[in-house]
Image (cartoon, rainbow, N blue to C red; front, side, top):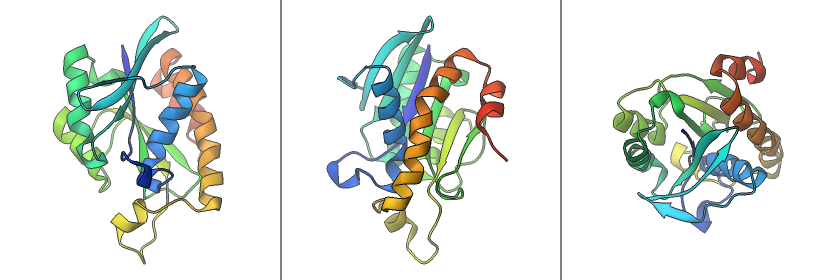
Amino acid sequence: MKLVVGLGNIGKEYEETRHNVGFMAIDAIAKSNQVEFASEKFGGKYVSFNKFDEKVILLKPQRFINLSGEVIKKYVDFYQIPIEDIFIIGDDLDLPVGVFRLRYQGGSGGHNGLKNIELHLKTQQYKRMKIGISNNKQMDTKDYVLGKLSKEEKEKINEIIKLCPKIFDDFLTKTYDNVMNLYNKK
């Protein structure tokens, strides 16, 4: 069983904000697989289905992003999902808008959602997709990440979002090394 998580904040006021690119990505994956987040459990909206003979859970934690780890841990424990079968999608201040990276592990980079995930999973070694949102050093970080995407940012991020269903399929069918080699551009 695979658990694929999109990070974001709940509520209309957070739609199309930089911090919600994980929700945008997971929504694109759900849409491409013709499934909807119709169920709710353990503080998260989820959908489970089979693809390529693999059971998959897509998850959108429904607590604020800095509490995502609590929700994810409940799914991991209940479904007994190994850490190596988890894939987290979220924003990254250290990458330019329009750039993404797939990684096996790494620190939180100051991302409170990732800090909470590391706290609850007790590891930094989980597969992740970091979608760049850049950083505006002239703004308070909280205000920046919770700010709406500009038209230009949205266009660049939408190009990445369009790739997410293919990355998801490859995550299910290839080794993660192969997936990283396919998508991580120098």
